[in-house]
Image (cartoon, rainbow, N blue to C red; front, side):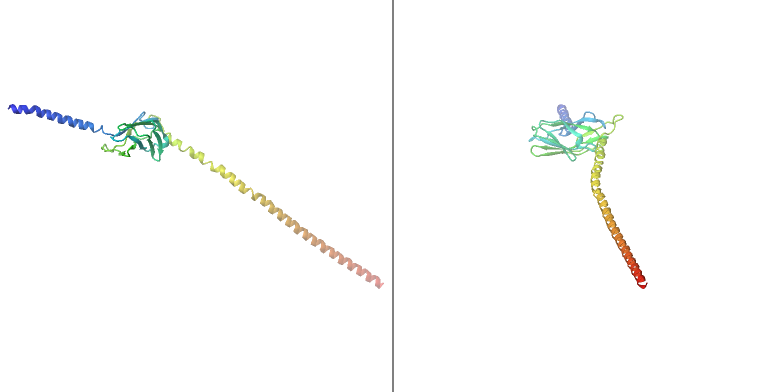
Length: 254
């Protein structure tokens, strides 16, 4: 009987320790390395918003040297500017987002930086797929977007947005049409000078042709007039000769 009572406290103690280990294990899950994003104004259509990113270091041999981010739909690379970053790190635009990096950070140091976005899109959430490259070439891919509450192994940083403020309107689309009207009229002025000089040469050519025709007509008219005058003179000579012959014949008869 005493033995059963003696083992009971040890059984309870073992159970308590096991529960504590389970709790610690569950708590350690979310503490695993991951990438996060927060916003100074997490609302749809908010303007000049600062986004702060944190990529936790998970390598024991090298530090983070570069981060490549794929921007979500509605944010273009030219709408992003660097606000704060580790020393000597620079931001470079890419076709689908941007890359930020520089000298590798100390091993175990999280990469923290912030950017300014001209305007957030009218969405409920934004996912920023991120690739972490370490100084030794190792790459961690935080590119999975959880759906329907499912858990993923390498979740991308996701920013949940609140509803847009009353009266908020998108400004990004208004910036893109502006170059189009200014670009469209430019071909018209350049085309006008090219057409006018090309049309100018035929104008002098036309008078030249008419002048030649006029000269030819005058020459032909002069030739025809000369021919008529010659013919009349010949007729007059014949008439005079005939008259002279008739008068002379009449006198000889008398």
